[in-house]
Image 1 (cartoon, helix red, strand yellow):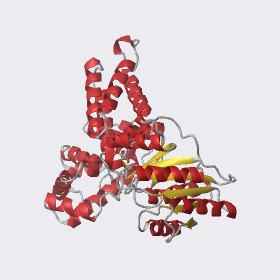
Image 2 (image 1 turned 120 degrees about the vertical axis):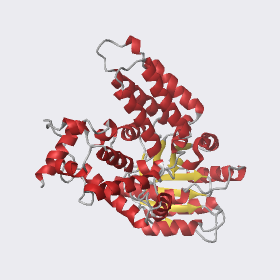
Image 3 (image 1 turned 90 degrees about the vertical axis):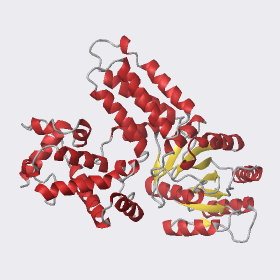
Image 4 (image 1 turned 135 degrees about the vertical axis):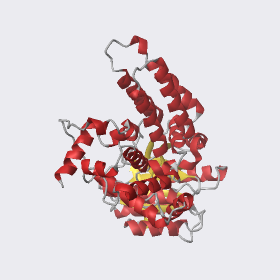
Length: 446
């Protein structure tokens, strides 16, 4: 999950609102205050947060709603709609198409260190794999030593033709030669041009950017920006848009970064459409960005996270003898959790989880828990590394099982068990019917 901590906080605020016995103005205000805190903690600009809160308040007039109106649904829809508007300044003016002749030219700009060169390769590879285009890469970054070698290495790995020079220092000449070569060969329909970056925004960079753009006449200029700068993205994106015809933005390093929400909202505030987000170091780690689907996905999808596993353990420990629970729900937990030793193991696992960060507890990517994180959790909990690995394996097993839960329509007589599980956790099982289905399913397998 991208922005797992932010989406988790937003879902928590909406869940508490939905679970309230009576939805009145105080419940709405509390929900909006929680949402505002979550956005501020994600480094979203204060002005944006204030506008989001005011807009939702003006949209949701509880007193004016007709009797019988589902107030929870009205509030939820208003929150989703406003967050979508916050991140959606519109679509880019151009998108590459398969078979175009002459080939489309897309020029990449940005500061050094933003991941621009790698993103060029990702962008080309994405359009080849998902859109069927035949891309080529041109390295017009003659400022940074090793830029051409980096692009050459990644392009070769991705199997994409490339052009560049170790000896030519004029970026305009290299860019023109590369674009002309690939257009003359008539073997590609998308040419991606990488340009020089700097450690900071400066006149020389902007002037060089203008010269390359004038010479290659790109169909689209893409600004690549590092998510870690958060709301400072507003000034960067605005400055680049004023200096060059930037038509789209790609935000990199979004894989779990706390400031990702600030970066996305700041870029949107400049009316620059975000077209992709970078979610990792590997070439396929590039996701198409659509504000509507992004918001809906982040706020509605349920994943069996480590935090959910901790809640499950806590609920199970409060239900009495573990052996009785295992007999009631065969297969729900593995044989390693039986009777007294099983309870002790759950408590140790919960201690390990207490040493984990929010991003680790709420994350869904197995890549997140690397060796250094596992070692840190082991030290923090005072447990051996192998036990942390065992805990992660148990979570992986249960997550896989949860993903296979079917929908059912007829409840089973297990209300005493359902009532013992906290509502947020019950949602992870697919609600009452989902848990009932799980119990029948596991029982049928034994």
